[in-house]
Image 1 (cartoon, rainbow, N blue to C red):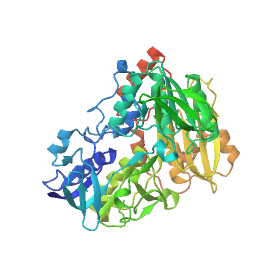
Image 2: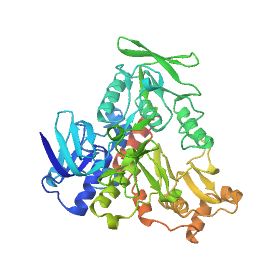
Image 3: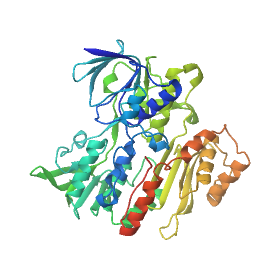
Image 4: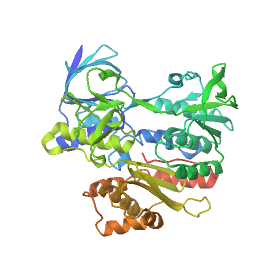
Length: 483
């Protein structure tokens, strides 16, 4: 038993939706047997970032639910429901797990025993959450221990939260998932303690000084941080965690636990068949793997970044997923005109009235600017990372669209910094002026900035609603990255 398609997208996350839309825009509707998406989830591709924000809102706030956040609304684009795929000739093979792949035979075997063959494969398998047991821990199967990678996980988290009003939640991990889930928990009137072994939150991106601001902000909203240690074990009674035991012997009462300790790219199907690099599938500038008929995108792809001198990087962020998916389709359909991807690394987040963006690479010496005190009526501060005398990365909290464009432009061009003290003193004014003067370094990318300027547009209505609800209820914290 089997089917054959010209193009197969393996994976049903964000990348699949954006790849499908790009295909239709470049090629028109698919003909029978031309394009399918294979997903182990039961629903059409959706914007995963919504799961750690609007989806977790208290019930009275009317949290986000499908079909409202199917792709590609996160980029202020079309809403691709199941009917959209049918109308455009794209076959959705949902609730189907691929258990093996044979790159030489160009064939995929599903758990039902069906073989699906392809001429061109786009691997969009994403990443999976790391489990406590992988670090010597326990308790992942407990009724009140939650992870967050898909909508099934989110439904469990919502159920557990609503079963624990006024209770104690232990959040394990101080990265994106830990911080975002902690915020949602507090919004649901649950007492939150965040535990992680590092010296400060978001330590892969934030400097200690930047992290201090956000940790103080969270603390002012009732969150407790326990740093420099880890949860060594969980005590379980009648199927539920009751206590989290730390390495230093402390015991924390727990009505629920949320685990956000990192992710691992889903590459297992292709181990020994495709070249790997830095935890992902190695691709070239057209997102093409070591096998010319296979492309890889999103969390699973390690690709050369022109801005970083061609250094190969793997990014776990929705902006990268959207862009690499579109580029892979363009390259697969017309490789001669697609060229190599020219990606500007980009991350963003929102907390209450706070909002930050980061561009580039946090390499070199960090130069901070602005007021980082909680007493400021509206926070506006940031940092530039200077490497070899040029701006390599930039972080800005509370900027305007024009200011965010200015820092992105400065990073893209690698603006020269002759005087570090002047950069610290002038901050934003320095890069705005350099942008007006033409700056120095490589060429710019207006389209890149225009794309980033749309961040959050699709979520504007929901953000306004959330702001109203939080203002009315004085709820402590929501970290918001747009869909």
